[in-house]
Length: 101
Image 1 (tube, one colour):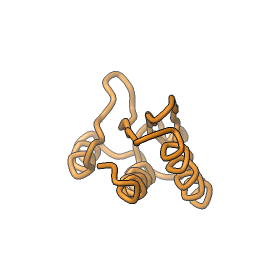
Image 2 (cartoon, rainbow, N blue to C red; image 1 turned 45 degrees about the vertical axis):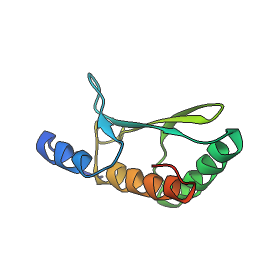
Image 3 (tube, rainbow, N blue to C red; image 1 turned 120 degrees about the horizontal axis):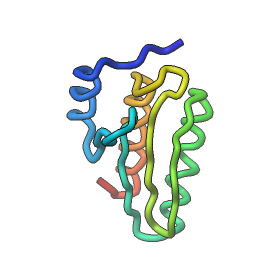
Image 4 (tube, helix red, strand yellow; image 1 turned 90 degrees about the horizontal axis):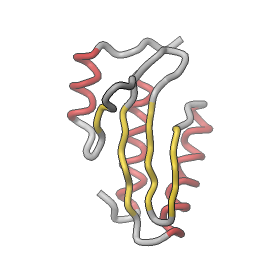
């Protein structure tokens, strides 16, 4: 099982992630990505889905037209873990390929 990050470690890790923030009242981190259109948003989600499936760690997300809202938390650990931080980094990298940052 993956270990949940301490509050201090989570805050430090999130501070290094552009666009991500801790979620008030919930053990999760979140970010909203805005793309040029639906096609880009869906393309982003498809690429992230392949990474998530490979690592067996899946995001909670919502897509409306060109916006993708993401919440990351490791449910088995009851909060944010290194797996969430690594997936957030991967998502930022994929978004960068679309010119979003």
